[in-house]
Amino acid sequence: MALGLVAFHLTAWILCHPFALRPLFALLRRVRPVAVIGSSVLLANGADAREVLKRFDDFTLGEVLSPRMTWGPFLLTIDWRDQHDRERALFQSMVAPEADVRRIRALAAKTCEQALAEAKQGYDGRRQIDVVQQMCELVVVAIAESYFGIPTARADVAHTGRLLREIAGIAMVMPPQGSARDARAKAAIAELTHHIEETVGQRALRVVPAPLSPVDPAASLLERLVTAARATDKPVWLDDDFVRRYVAGLAATGGATIVRATTNALYEILRRPRALRLAVAAAEALDQAERAVVRFEGEGSTSAGRRADAAALLGTRRDELRQILYEGLRFRPMLPLLLRYTPRDTLLAKGTSRQRLIRAGMSVVAAPMAVMFDPAQFAAPGTFLHTRSLDDYVHFGFGPRTCFGKYVADTAMLEIARSLLCLPGLTLAEGWGGTLDYDGPVANSLTLTFAQFQSSAQTG
Image: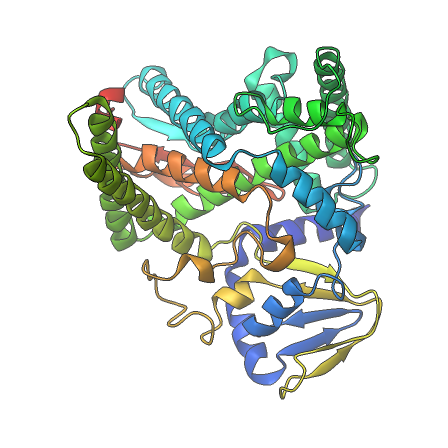
């Protein structure tokens, strides 16, 4: 147990504080870009890491993740390519891309506005907010309830946030069997599973079987899946248990992604004065562009061309802020290390000086940190450059297993960051509160202060 706890905390520390990996990968790129350590392979070259993430059949994920997905099989753990593609295609058919993004954005914006209003009233003029517990987790619960379709457990937002946090933790790093953390995680999974099963059952009673049809954008993801599971022409594997497993998986992994991505990016930006100035300017420009679109939509006399130009500018402004957030996140990725399993002997980096046979049964570490700090992949990797192509980053994975829920996490992260960056005088709190604190592998708190509170009319 003691050794297990040490290994757990060490792994969690590396995932949350990956700065030590940069010099390690820099050294290995020179002396041993494909380093075999026991039964594991550590890749220091960015091109090799991308290759592993791209080769679905030769480097699998089920062996690595199945023990952590204790609520049952999920898209991430399926290594049978045909079934993975079928289930991914089904999920894609359940999404209304434009409508869902607008819905998630509106949910995040409303939740952030309420959180900032409460921060003003609750701290007697101190103007501070815990980004994790008083904003990110509130947004996660709001999205889980309204978009995923999971009602708030016990009608308690804070409790639901803790449930999702515990489940996210075990999905990233397995705690030792029998430890207090293991017991908490299993209790959280059992409660959330039962909660979702009840919700699925209640929704199913309202569904009249009919052929599969286009999704209703106003329905939750759970409602869409339940309806599909009752369709007369549904796949045989689509049933209520599938709905429960997949909704639980999306809520757990998606919630963790939103929290880690947002807090990690903001923390790294706030530590860099130039990056903070760029981010504030980008957030304010985004606000102005959004207000212009709203104004033009309310003016019947505005030409279609002018509205189209305003909408295009709004998209550009969103990408400009997204670039800054992605660059901040590069220095502290959501998951700096990604694992894959080798089911059969396979050749890596064929035709290069790094070519090596990876033996069956070996684990391969394909690290986003290795990709995003390899000079051959990212010019001047030690410099904060906010003009890099968004397509170069691997924050949401790479290849056929690119994160399905990216549209959810990306939209929520952008909205949370925008709402905070528009506050004047935003800075990290003094002392320990202004450091990014973790509970095992999950973000626990990050306190920011601001000079004054802005009303909803000012924040747009």
